[in-house]
Image (cartoon, rainbow, N blue to C red):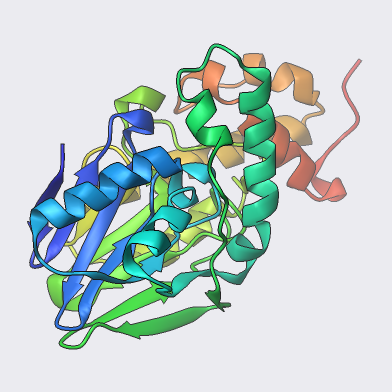
Length: 286
């Protein structure tokens, strides 16, 4: 639907494919683009939307994590705007090529997906400017902060804070989308046990008036983030309790009471069982 301004010189484009958000942050030195969509073809649409907005040129890119729906447009944006720096957490940058190979293998196997050809044709370009904890980017008349608050959706998540506008771009640490039923992205590389603590750090970067842009879905507020943090915390503690009582991982989804639809929690439950220390797991009851 193109870019809409959600705060002073912060524009969000919400795309139908994956209900993913692509965000622009404007400064006197140019535009910071946060996430680049899921293919070269989709990214060309992003470039068209930026030019239609008419507020400047992209001078830097941020990937909030390594997944393809946030990184596969990197090459096209570079082709459009030159060798602009691409920023990401060091772990995300390190994992981008491997993550791209995994998703291309899935699309290769699925001959029915309408996006198959464009995903397979995309050249994967990882970030070349990395950090471990936090870094500030100078956009001229405003500073933007990149913060790695901890592991959650992936090991290399970052959030983007625009302090003067009281905006936080949360990546997939926060998701609102109806496409997922409001369930966060519990993939095979997530860290559900650590995710609530990571969101505690994120909440510490917000105020009661903050505009929070999730990786997918509508713009939300601090209360939404706090609610989702608590739901993920309940999920983690429920699995911890089941494991401590000897419930087997394959039986856990059916045995628990969940804050999210049970059919969407298989990966999350498996990951928690994998990440629990042995002292918190008992042998299955017979």
